[in-house]
Image 1 (cartoon, one colour):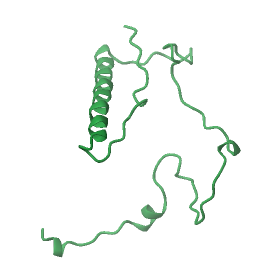
Image 2 (cartoon, helix red, strand yellow; image 1 turned 45 degrees about the vertical axis):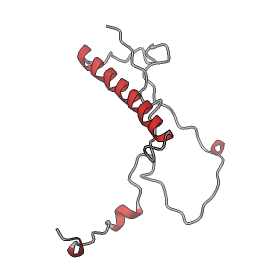
Image 3 (cartoon, rainbow, N blue to C red; image 1 turned 180 degrees about the vertical axis):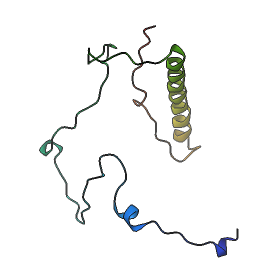
Image 4 (cartoon, one colour; image 1 turned 60 degrees about the vertical axis):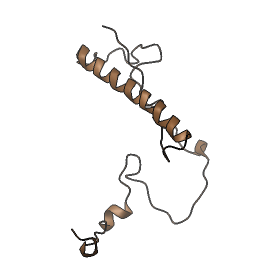
Length: 114
């Protein structure tokens, strides 16, 4: 397709105005920037299934119905992401790529009790 004949497509007005990510669905739009103190707002609860020792927080919760193979796949994927973070972060620090945001801490904790 010829670039000069391509048609410019604009965002639907409602998509451009209203944010579409979790936590912002009901947030209002403002035209002034205000600095706020986080302690003036309620604390956002954190979701946690198990503690740092691998013990389930909710003792009444049933164990997840997953296979050993699924757990190993998840673990391998977390390792790959961790290794890629190291490689890409070092490449970014060396100037070989312009930007990379590591996902440190996103892997969570995986307990293997099999």
